[in-house]
Length: 190
Length: 198
Image (cartoon, rainbow over all chains, first blue to last red; front, side, top):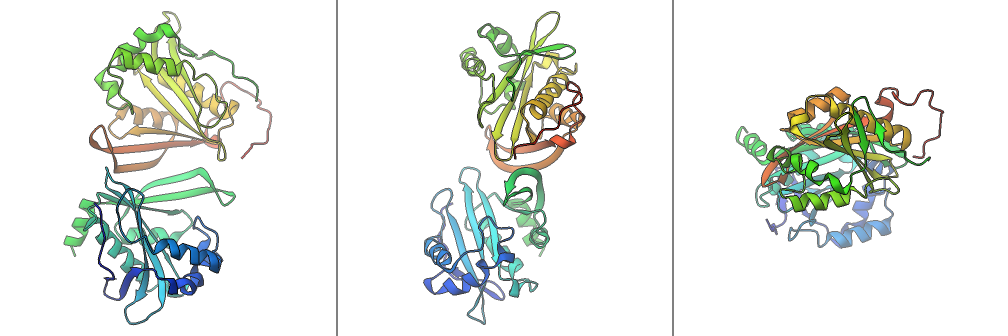
């Protein structure tokens, strides 16, 4: 359903909030990197491209109609710097489907920030946004990415082999998904 | 690519384009609830089927991505139309194709679909140079699942409740087959090596 959350969203260690114009350098610090872009659709972004992306994101803070996306900066609560970003896209209004995404700065990997922030996005999607199913996808070679999805309690639903070309090569892609009922039972089992 | 030669013969079938006179034969199976249960666009009445046939009659070649080739399965001997198979060229950059099929339930279990799909898969890989074929089917359609396994397709996706289908939560399976996974073609021996256009 239509959704305009009150920001920031807080987790134990993190603050999730809309992007602002002052975030360009912090975003460029990770979106400009080759290793970060390897499995993303976009190539490494220039500072100007980051500025443009952030301009778009300043309005990507709620759901009004199908295709809308919420893209949020992730910060540590005790620190100002951005450690990464998370997103939720409203893929189908009728079937209440959402797609989850995340990108984190490699300097902040391995601390559980991505797990904490994406869990907050699942709570947003299944809670206030009233979604029925949330899915995410990744390149099959991106092991940390699908490990994260398994930690979130998502099931591997698809393993596509060579179903498209990706950056000049045959792709191999995983789809993971979680249903509302599965999310509920995870939250209730603690 | 040389032009497509139709009809295609298998052991027990002739695969040919649809004709205007096929209406009665197609209606016999198309409007049945057991067939309607799994089709994307309902064709519950004769006039719906007539529209579908007029579309299928034009689906005789794959000239550009998005085109579909649809063939009627006609039994040798009594010339009964028992079902239909189709191949859609879904993407050119990655040479992707999709197979679809339907059979008169009274004629299922006789190996006709196995024959027809085998011929169509040969055609897709040998003639149209498709790299990967996929088939979507409803998770409840056990006959389709068995058929896919028999033909050697891999289960690539099992979506649960990812869309509403005919008013219910769906369960959708995707099966796939790469050209190099398909058995050596039964119809073309000593295939000359040709560069594939990726």
